Image (cartoon, rainbow, N blue to C red; front, side, top):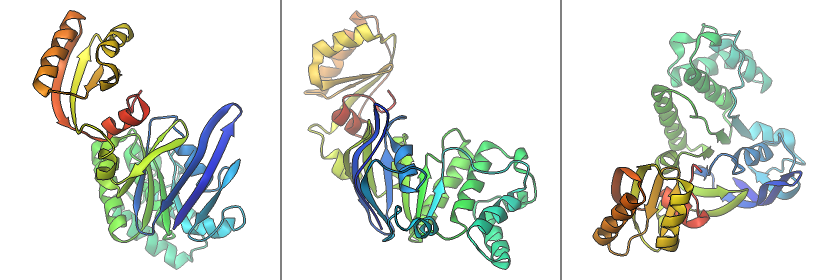
Length: 308
């Protein structure tokens, strides 16, 4: 369904996408997980034809964006980070406008728009202008607009950033429904819980490179130790972080007011870590021992916290 080989894109000295290769099967839901600035949005823009790559090959539903741009555009739906709607139009008018760009007949436009509004739970607001909608409601309309032409593959670029919990849950349910129906989805996020909850496979992106990919279990299996001691702290300065790093070496990872330690003996290491924090005047707000998650995988692969 989607094949990407050695895709690159630079902005002057900044290598935004650095040799990314990936393959997504038909009907899969694939997450590109990484921090802000990792290259996720640039990758989506390259795949959707908004940007031209410096090098590399892309095949979408059997078509090359460089030689068959219209066929590619008919095959994809794109949900960008920035909401692409008209505030002065109603929800229904927005959907009619975007559907018309795909050449859908007027009768079919009405039917599909009504069905989409029902699906996203906003049929009762269909004839109200978008300027009266919350950010989360606008994002749901954005998703409806992207699937009106029934694309083979849907690109979703961080669709839940900055929205209310109700809209986030609506979006999760819609993604899961589309996935069950067989739609192929490429989903970018910096929220680990979204990647774990929604996607079959996960690609971890950092500084423009795809550093690992696989199922959640396959990624966890890359860790030498499946257990982590996690501290949430107050007063963890960079200088204190350096001292802890010197004490524990590559077993410890330091984030913003957070510490992750790969233990040798859990109880002994907890006692020692708590004592060290006390001596360094670091207040421990929360301590837990848990099985490795995607954040632990990211730390192991990149040496830094996902939200750094």
